[in-house]
Length: 217
Image (cartoon, rainbow, N blue to C red; front, side):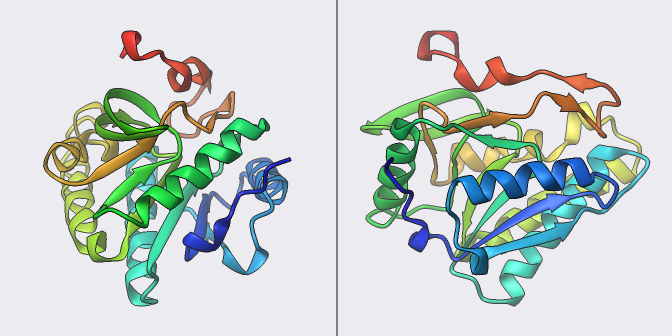
């Protein structure tokens, strides 16, 4: 089995609500399965709000602030419903992706997501300008302030009563993708667990979102 070389990633932070011990078990199993060095892993206790999407973006901002304050070179943010593929090809794609980032100016990148607009650079390394779902993305150190500011506007809008469908973090980051250097692994190397969503209030099955063909995007 091909092993992922995690040396490129400074820290991996997974976001997990205190009450979701089932999700904590799941993501910790995933990280162990992927042979992530334990010293790189940090659990962030998710911020809970009545509006789950608000707590979500607040949690992401808190993690990015933590990364900034600790001067991490980069941070891979995972939500606790991330499931990594088990196949060698996916592991190889992760290594290829990390290696590609070392030789290019980059701001952020996806290991998986609900992609809609991607452009191949080489191999499985793609430029991306539209993607939803924030279950696995990496942010470069110089970009922390930029993304914190944009997510901050998302928080402000939700606090003003704007619908989360118009101002969630994975809506607000699109203009950054068009403008800046965001990249993605394609095909995705993971997907979102089929499970009860604390944001939606029901069981969500978005597995197909992570396996769209180019023609379906």
